[in-house]
Every structure is written in C-alpha cells, then in structure tokens.
Image 1 (cartoon, rainbow, N blue to C red):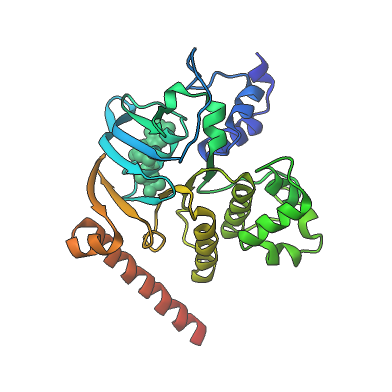
Image 2 (image 1 turned 135 degrees about the vertical axis):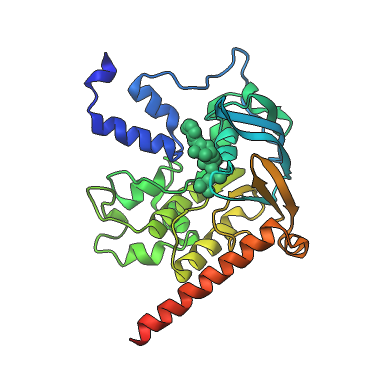
Length: 306
Ligand code: ATP
C-alpha cells in the first residue's frame, strides 16, 4: 500500500538509480519497502579484505532462462591489478559488474573476493568494499559538495576539494559562481556526461575502496574530456583491484589483462599488444574503432575550416 502512495516519477527515479548502479541501493529499497532480489544469507559475515583479489569461476547467468547471458566465464583480477572486459554490445559486460556488486546471483559458478564467496558475506560489507563509477551518474538535486561528500559522509571540505582535484574537476567547480556550493542535478546546473562522471570519480576517491568497478560511459566524449577522465581514472585505479567495463577500446590499452567476451564466453584474452598480434576479434574491433575516430577527427577539421 505504501508503494501506491509514492508518486510515479519518484519510482521512475528510483528505477533509474537502480539500473545505473548508484552505490546506495539498500537505502532506496528501504524507502520503497520492497524486497531486494538478493538478500543476506542467515550466516552472512562481513567481508574481510586482505588484498582484494577477485576470482570469477565458471559464471553462468541468465536474466531470462530462455536467454543465457554468461556461459561459463572464468577469469581473475589479481590484487591491485586492472582487468578490462570488452566485447560487442549486449555481450554481458555490465552484467559481470552487477554480479560482483551482487545485484543478482549467478545460477552456477562463483565469485570470490580474497577467497570469500560474495553470497556468504553481508551485502553491506561487500558494497562498502567496492567503489562503482557507473555509466551514467545521476546527481542529487543538491550542491556539488554534497554530491561528492556522498562518497564518505564525514569528509571535510578540504578532503572534498582534494578529491575534486584528483578527479580533475576542481578547476571547473572553482569557476562556477557558487563554487562547491553550486546546486546541480535536474533542478540545478546541468552537467555534461563527462563532468558528471568526474563528480562520480571524486566521490569514489573519497570513499577510497579497495576494489573499483569502472563502467565506462557508452556515449562518445570529446578527445580532451576523454583524456582528462582517463588520467583521473588512472590515478584512482592505481594499486587498487580494478574491473573496467569498457565500451571504447582507447581506455583499455594499459590494462594488465583484457577479456574479450562474445556470445557469453571468453573469445580471447591477453594484453593489448598480445591481442593485436593474435589478429582476431579484438584486433578487428580496434581497427574499426580507430577508423571511426579518424573519420570523426577529419569531419571535425572540415567543420572547423568552414
Ligand atoms: P553494452 O556494451 O551495450 O552496454 P553489455 O555487454 O554491457 O552491453 P549487458 O548490459 O551485460 O551487456 O547485457 C547483456 C544482455 O542482457 C543484453 O542482451 C541485455 O538486453 C540483457 N539484460 C540486461 N539487463 C537485463 C535485465 N535486467 N533483464 C533482462 N535482460 C537484461
């Protein structure tokens, strides 16, 4: 009954937040008094992070039994390393990040962090250990400072400024009329996709989690913004176990390992140079993307010379 009295647009908002993987999902479920799909087991204990090594073993997963999404995927993200998952649209890349965050449980196989199955630990401790930079960040209708502080509610103003600095967004913020007190979100200043993503990065810098999931924005960013975001991400992911869900390949070149997913299975894996040498799916995706970037660059030059 409670649910019926909640305005539809609020439900829409919550739905979007859930889809986009905002960190505080549990609070949202509390608000709506709905049962989350996944709940703590009776004997759930807090996750004890030693190094933060992740192992995905023989993952089988479907949303709909008629359509398997993952069909036996195994790989590891060693502590402090960066592993990127790439592959065609719909291959199941983001699904892997949702399983790690335990929005859903696998039907077969397991995901462990330092040897502990994610199904055996409390969701609260699991989500506290993981920082998620989602594809498209939804900002609260509040100040920039509030939106960054969300990563660690007790953070001081100085810490917020430092986090913004690391995320390469502090220049932008300081030039705003009200600086960190500028209101953003649907009813405030509208930020671009790249700016929002950097606010999400600043949030994650404050949270300082041992494990990081970067679900890269699908939308194209201009080259300068992309470089800024990339260098912010490089700083944040340094010495932190990082899983990158990549929709563009330019961001995965430096990854310790690249997993190429296709049809629910790992089609290829290796470093960027190893995969190029294999001259398979990754190499053809890389070449296609390079051609597209060059074409865009040429178009831009033509437009600018007009
Ligand atoms: P992209 O690069 O386009 O973001 P992806 O590889 O990240 O794709 P996923 O988001 O993991 O793909 O989705 C894999 C498949 O699962 C897609 O076909 C998608 O339609 C389907 N899917 C995703 N979420 C759900 C859901 N909640 N219910 C049913 N099907 C879903």
